[in-house]
Image 1: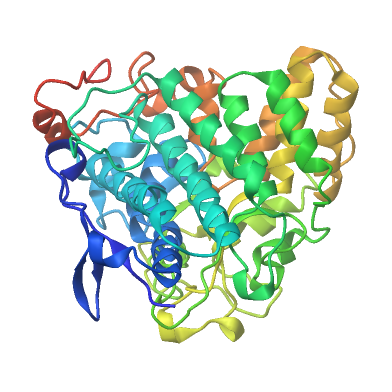
Image 2 (image 1 turned 180 degrees about the horizontal axis):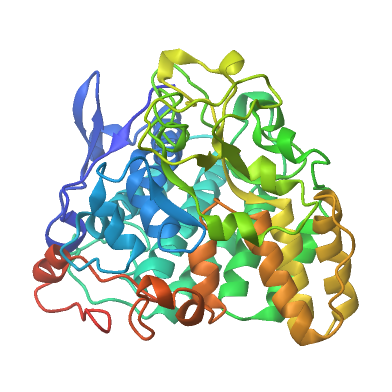
Length: 474
């Protein structure tokens, strides 16, 4: 199956309709009217959406410093003089003109456009009806994921439910509440159609459990705790389980295991290449570029005896369980890296670059258990909250939580999310949604009432013909 890209100009979602063609690298440009005609076209267009999940825009620099460096558990990494522009995210001095703010915005809209190409055009194709409905459901779940990224970073954004028939992309921002409602609709519709499992040939396609799992997380952000609780219970009942070995969980052998709810397949495959997700974070000048590294604050956040500490943080001079001696090639780089993205030398596929086979875990069952625990606690069901936080703690080699009241348990769950999901791009949005950001990130320059959101990029503001209102403080 060929890798295709549904392309659009940088500002097409704001000023024009340059999204009306499909770019197939080895065959040139094809008009949409001439492309979406067969079942194979539908499959290829859907594959183009999946390809974005492993792309630079979704997993490389823009995503890593927007979601990662802004928190207190990740810092720029590399050496001090390398990509110093990332420091603006560590101290909250980025502006609407910053390239990272712009790059993440553009990337997510490119992805939304790919989904809307499928959602608009595939229904018109004469093909197997069951497959058609499944591809549309897959794409709706992925569109919900991209919109979830957008709303958490930028707040309310324009909603495009398919390609607009009038070809007008210049429209005002919808409210955040409207965007969340749109996400819920997409995920609910997707979950009603998607299967729970696929054959080996389709490994990596989104599932019913993935749609419901993401929906439970969306409800948590919406503070709809009853629905977060009910939906996460549906996922828990589907048979997922924690991988008993935290190291195995993040190695290639643990991919698509019992804990995988939503995972990106990054196989180094012909026509796709791999992913640079692991390379940009790999040990500096040994495995990769050495960016986006653990902070001392994260190191100190783990309790004594927590096996996750040493399996999350890779250190200069250590020998891994797989036999690699960690030795950076840059004396000016730091001494700690993200072990969750480490690929042992014996397993690395150099054909696509270091770590290109490393899958990206977007949603794990541990997260579902903690979503359920948090929702249960907010609903007053302390017993269930304790049960599920203890499952996560016990897997980490820790005893049961000592928290017993709603208030103490709330803090315990937030802390558990920090150490369980460390380096997985959850910390900053978690701090914002729980109201902790202004306190925890104050020393980094976080300004309450402003830095909960990023600015809308300046060029997007300019091209909106006055229809966009900038986020507060920018």
